[in-house]
Image: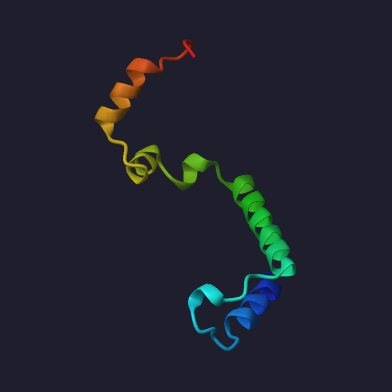
Length: 84
């Protein structure tokens, strides 16, 4: 499945380049369906072997979305367990 997707993408992206990048042909429906199947299978395999907390920690996620400890303290004042 991965080899088929790689071949489809290589063929599309290796074609003669358009005059502008915005004119690049979009992926075909076959390529989109195959990419979705690969994504679903990868997600299924990862979730079967590892929990989200095994892959990334809460502080890393908080940092990625721009939250710091002070923000979390402020949010905890408004959203306490059992009140929502």
